Length: 246
Image (cartoon, rainbow, N blue to C red; front, side, top):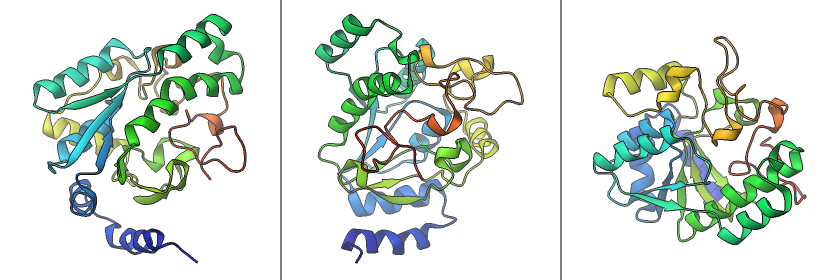
């Protein structure tokens, strides 16, 4: 039997099919604000969502892994200049120091398990703190981005984070739609996009890709496509190891 929130989400999911990002965020604000957060890595998708959000009860938060490109901070700064308040969350200093001292600065390239361990410290643990006190959170995930996101719904129950509601207003959008909105609204975006970086994460885990390659080919390029998640958007399936979305 579905829980009450799962029943509600199943109903709302049907209502929101085809809704604009503004429509999805408006429903979320009415239902969850002020316990509603928008997770920003300052991708083009996040810029579209920050621009679309008008609810005073929505909190924009970001995770500083300690290894972000300068261009990401510049996008964040531009949004700050435009009046958007961003709550920053950082990894625990002791955990980062222990990882660096025990395994060095590039252990994430040794194995999938080592890369997950780095992401767990630098991303997953801070996200857990960022989500505390929230009833729902918003992401810029899109189905087109990768095989691990192909089954993405506009609204989901996020069992990996204690049953929070997770909203993906751009789930059905194409990259072309995102960029059209960026240009139409003159929204901030990373200068790395103009240098061949279609998808941007931590600096050591991101590189430019030739035109025509998959947009996420430059993320963790030493791994198989089905492994290219950092743990923020995965669902555990009876294992201590993060698992890709189904």
